[in-house]
Amino acid sequence: MTRTAPAGQNILFLMTDQHRADTLGCYGNPLARTPVLDELAATGTRFDRWYTPTAICTPARASLLTGQAPFRHKLLANRERNVGYIEDLADDQFTFSRALREKGYNCGLIGKWHAGNRRTAADYGFDGPELPGWHNPVDNPDYLDYLARHDLPPYRISDRVRGVLPNGGPGNLLAARLHQPVEATFEHYLATRAIERLERYAADARERERPFFLALHFFGPHLPYILPDEYFDMFDPADVELPASIAETFDGKPPVQRNYSAHWTFDTMPLEQTRKLIAVYWGYVSLIDREIGRVMEAMERLGLVDDTAVFFTCDHGEFTGSHRLHDKGPAMYEDIYRTPGLLRVPGAPGGVVRREFVSLLDCTATILELAGVDAKPAVDSRSLLPLVHGDEVEWDEDIVCEFHGHHFPYPQRMLREDRYKLVVNPDSVNELYDLLDDPDELRNVYADPEHAEVRSRMMRRLYGVLRERGDNFYHWMTSMYEVGEVEHDPTLSGLDESTYQA
Image (cartoon, rainbow, N blue to C red; front, top):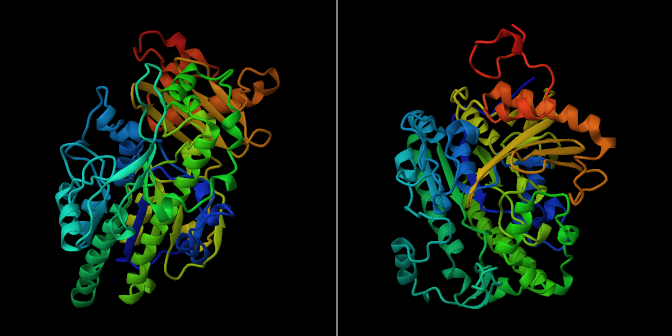
């Protein structure tokens, strides 16, 4: 039997950017210093197969906002690297925030927006300071005012870490030491603003019985990892175990992956530098965990814990040296598609671990159901509440993800099931990974004869899902791959009935 929380539930949505699951203690990192998020997992539900619909910021965030897959809402790229896609959602696009506002909710968003160019978070009904862009906007007037009011020093960095580009120029900044105390960091500023907003919403909830949705979106641990000494040096690089996929050769892989490795200058830096980068990345996660702790303490102080659902997740993952890559990009590896996902709902059991394939997309329907709002417009989203409550429910045994490009157009589709992953790359070689025998995805077995049955079965399944969704990527697959019986006119002409079954 499906049970839901009472309509009008308060919701706190904690979100990071470019966050690997294996940086958290609750996901198995023995060195992690993430007590706050580990406690959230211990008192709520941890999803072990939580995926992003696409490993790129703006499309993923637009999917969360709409409950629709990227191909459907059509916001497909970050504006900073946009090569011709639209930069804002359609005027009549459904969003959960507007639906919550109509229900009488206070809605706030503190931190990273990055879900459009012309329209801001305020245009979608969110309270909070406008903080545009993909990285910590350390020149933002509200942040500068915060520093001035608290007599805190300005942003200043040293010890920059970067490689060398193929053209000989300096590579992208990957990390740096920040010469500010923790209280001056952008992360501390964001948590402070979130607590201030939480206090206002809590008063409104008491005095007017008005529920709230408050999102706190950190810009980190997205690179560059810019941290004060305490966190820059928190982890000893000697204790960092390099990922097994550091042995990536790119043999049998799409050539773009090797080119992307050169773009991120991996081979121009010694492996010890990679150890340091991973150590600093873990430090960044620890800083964010500390700041989330301040918000959770405020929740306790304000008496909100027992009637507030708490989400924690991110938009997508990060390579941090895995597969000799950094950032994210045109490669559908687990490092950037499988992410952390935690959810605590009042009245639901704690310490629960679920292995179903779920998505960032599913947050949308969950939020709407918690608020007592019709979730049907979030057409690609499914509420997680039955899983959180431990109800018996049928669930898909696989998940489909998509990518459309970043620095350049690059369409990809992925089907991930329990053991295998299929990636279709129309302009290049396709990929098939046996995640039981090869969890680090080093060997592409797509062309291996012994995997022909798996390849054919998964190609047909992916084709069927894309057809059912209306994702036109399937058109290429119709003529190029073994997709089984075609029960439609692939030419879209209706002129030759012999090409399909009527």
